[in-house]
Image 1 (cartoon, one colour):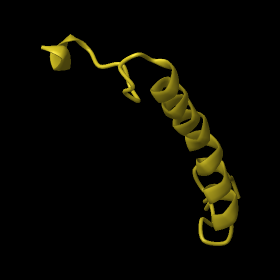
Image 2 (cartoon, helix red, strand yellow):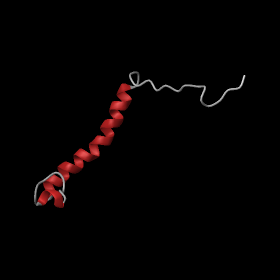
Image 3 (cartoon, one colour):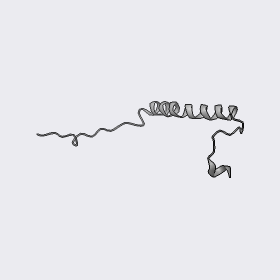
Length: 57
């Protein structure tokens, strides 16, 4: 028998490792939320994001 790369199925069990995926997504979201809070406190306009010329009129 000849086996190829396409014969084997690699299935990631998302439900089994749901806490790992939730922790990973939390670790990715946390710097963005901290950055938005930091920019709200430190910028003179007190906006969480610096808006572009599209929104400043």
